[in-house]
Image 1: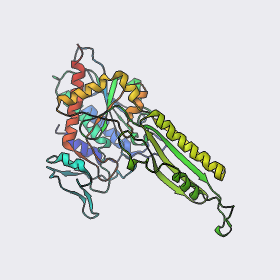
Image 2: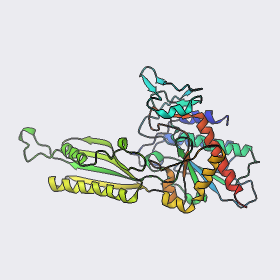
Image 3: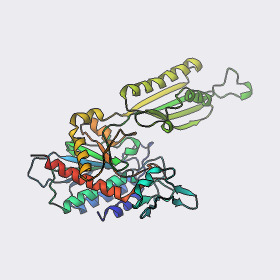
Image 4: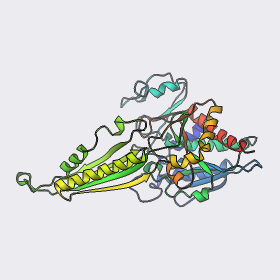
Length: 409
């Protein structure tokens, strides 16, 4: 375990921010820097079949050390960080023996991580927290998962008395832009099932996620001198505002939780001649998800009838709820749940209000629930992770490997 913290600090200071507008895989050259570093490290800790392909997908094997015929299981995390907030020049701060009070991330900018706003902080009094310096995200999503998997494999190499079957691990690029599993070679990976280490607080165990799509509305206008514009000007900005006004105002991320779905407008740009709206659509329920897409189509048709053929809607499905693929093999969730219980961790089984590589991988033939990696407040300057949570995640990985082998008679 002694290498877990320095390993994590090394990873987060390597910029791996992904780019949704790039057409390459990985989407940024910087992801190669960490990928190459990880390949070297996997060789150093004694893993076998270490490989990296032309798209920076990394795979490696810890061979079985038992004569039993044990299922091959896998553990997966992603290397990239979110494009929503800067991941360049990350300077992590270590807060030892956290006292439950405000943490000043950046005194000059008056940026404070406070339990008055982020109540989860109070769960970690007395622990060691890794935070940002207020200028960047941290990258615990998902470099905590990467560090945990490698540390767990290193521990198993060093402790051959713990019997386990063949274990496969993988690290992917571009998960944060929804492309982490697009070029994942499930056949090459060769696992019967896997777990992504990409959740948040200790105990999280997730096997269902949002159905997801993205949408783009493009509005073409006509610019005319405003003094003589009556019945001639078509103001694309005005039509864009009208489109947004017809959407349900409370069905947005800031007003939803639990199983509630939402629309999330994340980008608007416009001039009189052209305006664009980009948004994402999320819902756990397949019927409600379909209805959300139909609502956008209905709004588009209504505006076309009112203004003419100036409005174009494009919708692209991104991923589906993995529940339907995991439930038929529910024992893989039960193994993870039992591992946590044996370690004194209370499992928190709940739907993911987001996506994970596991959702796509499950539909590609690799059932893949998601397990906590320990971080909080992802994708922003208030991100942090308790060291003790990361240590617990390492122990869960080891215990899952042990249980999978011990349950085979």
